Length: 65
Image (spheres, rainbow, N blue to C red):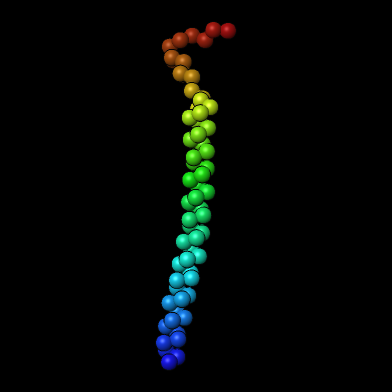
């Protein structure tokens, strides 16, 4: 009878540990998805984007002061 109790306890502990890990990962993925969604909305609706880089000067041009 004690072997059966030990096996049941082991199964319950494994299910509990996997449940906790699944809960933590779900929370992490949810917060990451919300952060990405906010960034996409900011870029799409406010028209903001990364600043454009200025083209580099041609090496044969003289500098004008």
